[in-house]
Length: 211
Ligand SMILES: Cc1ncc(CO)c(N)n1
Image 1 (tube, protein in one colour):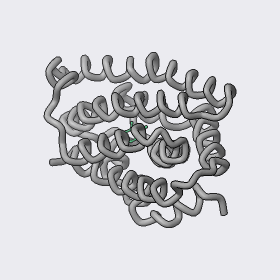
Image 2 (spheres, rainbow, N blue to C red):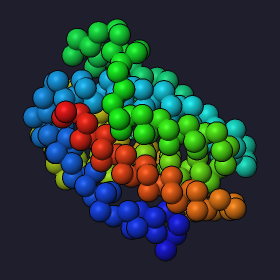
Image 3 (cartoon, helix red, strand yellow):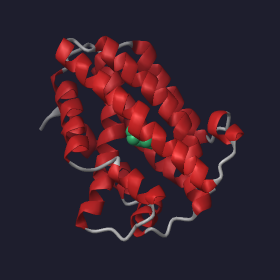
Image 4 (cartoon, rainbow, N blue to C red):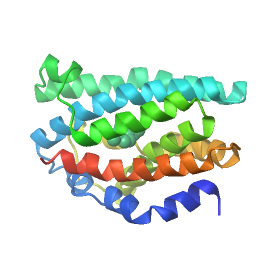
């Protein structure tokens, strides 16, 4: 098995808890409460901030121009499609400016920020990728559940689902996994620990939207 597949299997319980989470079920069904979606997205916009910084570090730490270009392209997508989704949905749900820029951070958001800050500060391609692989692969896994049929119809739901499935997003995840599986370093233990913490944080992040 590849390193990424091994680590996913080692964290199978939390991984499955995340992709089958009530939040995902209700999102795909289109029954998600607007308050829950807003609470989630307000926290996720802060996640997004640290995530973009982490991708910038991946671009800096990548060993080849080809890989750097892939990160640059993905950063461009995030700055357009994904950032626009947040803004449009905050407008649709009436989220005030303060909550878009300076919300009170929930515990799982703080934990995710700590994980991403740690990976970014290490400047280690392996550690950066450990976190990116979890964040993107786990989201592809729940997003792909919609391929078997979903009943969500509102743009606030459908656009978020569509950002995390389909051939382009799947190819991005394949790229990240291949980079992670090929990366060689002396910090495999640190990368494995970050991977496990990130999977646990994904479950807690969904939980927090309901509290
Ligand atoms: C918490 C979380 N994990 C992963 C993603 C996808 O990168 C996201 N937007 N939010």
